[in-house]
Length: 422
Image (cartoon, rainbow, N blue to C red; front, side, top):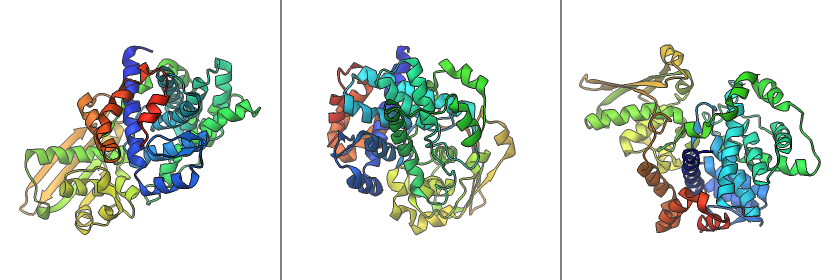
């Protein structure tokens, strides 16, 4: 693994740690943590401790709760949180070096991404909690030093422990979507424990489960070709606390606002044309915070009125704000078939802004800041980390950032874990 890959992996770890700490401030995360943190290994982001499988679950839940974690287009989901949550739980139990932790995260990221890339997920399924369980098992098995044959056995066992997820849960306001990654992290760690207890998986079961059960097809050739693909270098990173598919429209409105100020009272209509999967995020009246995070109308409206789409923009009170809902009601979203045809090479979005005086302003964007071909500068990622961590840890965030970015040099992970606790 070249230094450039390890350095980028450390950036993704730092970013994911920030998302985990931000997630622990959410009411539902704090409540389930209080209920199930009954002692065991220390949790990052709070003062509690839990048995390793539950620690993996709670960490994975926190890491996706505010929709700030990374993702990967080639994999078709969010590989990092699935690998990092169980790796942190295992590291809290075994105290490996920082170098070993980072290597395990890279291995888990790769194992999950490779399956996600090769399979064709059923349209009704959400990718969280599916192939990520294999990535979770790979991270834990790597930390335990498994040789190749035993590692493969762990992955085959984990393949049968994925979830039946729903892609529409979040659109309808179901925050159950936020526990998918945590459940997969827990099950991936359990898969390794089960293997050591004598339980076996289905030999050759990965293409069966992901090609016929959870998925509709599995491209064995693509799976083999991706054996050495550096998926982690293809990650996308966010600066807004909402679904990636809302962020083309967000960038378009950012660019229009940068050109000239806008009086929200003068807006008569906002029209968004985009590719098929983004066009499903068209709900104008979201019923809950997660539904708001998966709504192009709401994210655009909150950006215009409040200047951002950060965590607090999707609090329960913010979702109910009458002015934001009134503006969101003026936003329409449709699929543009020509844009869908340009995928996966390009992710295109056009936003048209219509004002009461007859003015029409329009902007088309391709991709989003933070995409692999439009990487965010280190300073932007450091500022994002500050915003995620400072509310809970104050000025300690600077040392925490440096420690996460330099995790490769830590002799033991206990230092990292202690630094990320209150």
